Image 1: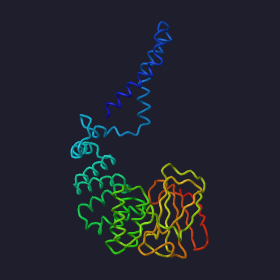
Image 2: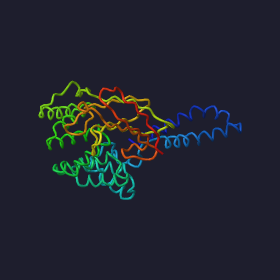
Image 3: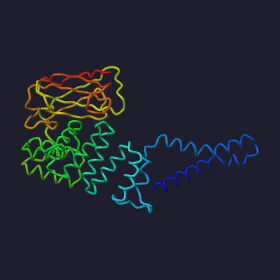
Image 4: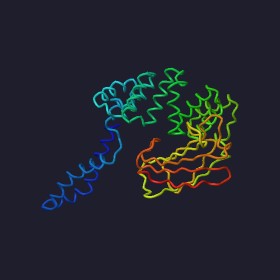
Length: 334
């Protein structure tokens, strides 16, 4: 595939030269034309390469691992050895370790997969939720009992950072169901059905919901009755960096521990209207529609991580049932 791509690039570069070279060749007796012809032949290919390298997000470091020598996709087992060798030579490559972890998991080498995802977490300071979810899944697949132990705690951490994470919702629902928290299991699996899922996955999730006696509404939707309406504005300088993520949580006033409900919004544009409903609940047996008052926190994370950091915008407010929309102005925290 790479060789074919390079060949296309060469053809296109030659086509560009063909547009300017004939006239310059006819006028080659003139010094200016000769210089222009020489410069065109040299600069057009060079500039094309430089512009592509500057703008491309293609991972050339792993290009040789994607296809076999005959152009056919290699088996996963064939990828692991060369990739592992590359990472031993260049160990500070989190994306390479992610690929290695996924490869190990696919061939059911779950212990090795967990170690590879652990390496990603080491390199990212524990902030990569995909790696944390990958490690949790590898531990669970290797020993299902760990869903009720440390791996289950990792799943809850992923859901706290990304409440709509599909794998987090699946395993989080299994954990809740196994510990008798059927209400939260139903909420998580219904939320999972609100996202894009394959027909096979949908059938499995609906089967679990039916097992718990839960009614699956059309499209997997959850009623939004008893919701909290928020209107959010951004204070000065109102210039969050690209990739900033909005995190919202609702807590029962004076109650410690995890929030009652949480929501993550990527690519938020302000002013913004957001609704928290029972579908966003995270605590077993507790629903927004049952609360008369809530403590609301909204934080626009400059780093995209759930932990607080410099450059975030944050606002807190108290919501009471029947008051209408709660307006919050997120203020800059240098």
